[in-house]
Length: 478
Image 1: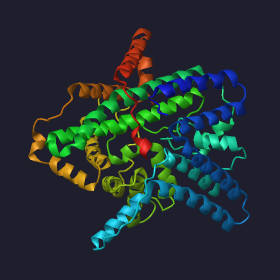
Image 2: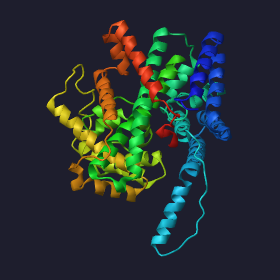
Image 3: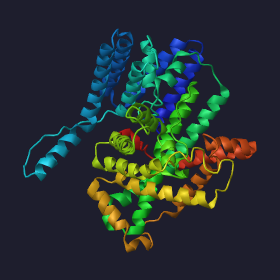
């Protein structure tokens, strides 16, 4: 079920009414309703893969209890290994099997062999990368004595399967979400209103911005050999805007939907394209994934508290693994490695934590230095996204070669002026509200009631007018 579909527009109010009007003072009833609703939400896509979600849930629930109750460190570790291996086994099978087979066949072909290795026509279960990481964080936190397992299978199942975050995050931690599942929740008008505003802004990002950018980005990338360098630059910029609007739009809708039911999920985006360096960008982009890899991979490897070469090694490991997490294609690995190359100089010069607060906090105009830093970081990001979007490495290299040609300074063959005006207005609104978690909150506090509601209605009209057939979110494929 897509957030930007009629199905979800019917589904959400029904669950909301049942939740607050029929189970208002019944915590177990609320949790059971949300769990059943989450399974319906997931099965709407393909009911055949619901068993995989339920199996993964029971696996980590059971192994979490066994880890906690183990009498010896070796037994404790054994249960952890069982959970990690089975979880990653499913992930590797469905997501990476064909990638490894194809890469092995290509290697043999390079060596002069002509192998006939069969691949499988596998369907990637939607959300598997996200709910797998939910479960892994749970058992890892229990193993590291950061968390005690819950005895209530419904509570744990809801933590893993809560429908707003089920298919594309944010990647939650049991230490953050499970206590909210287990504690009574009361209706909070302000929280619900903030949730609705966040859903509204998320739909604007997805439908008005991302889907429109996708039309032109797809046109240019899919026919890149026919366009000049300036047009390819337009395509790369539009994809950069698309992926932000698409994924952060999903996260906004997820966080806003969770607020309707009294939950506060982890923030996943914090105006990443206003970053002054790549380190700041990665503190603001897909925050839940970046922090997951930091806590469960980077720090256990020694983090930055090791010698120089290990610092570099750890940086490349975390970025390459992050790239590989996104998909079974060498383009994602190169994308991750490229971001590591961007990041290493900041790390070695101890400048990776120079920009911890939002740029120009409390100010409308940034300094010249901040403007140049933001522009430079944005262009580096645009370049890296070319690998992310390209069909394969060869396509990416051809795209870049054609981009950096004398034709880069020619007039673009494709330049949707109206769309760029919308994109510019969109970023102006985000800049104006950058001190808030949602720019609509800033607008709410600064405009008179009439103009505020007029602005909301304008956004709703834009969403309706821009709506077509519901476009899938980019991160559903990951």
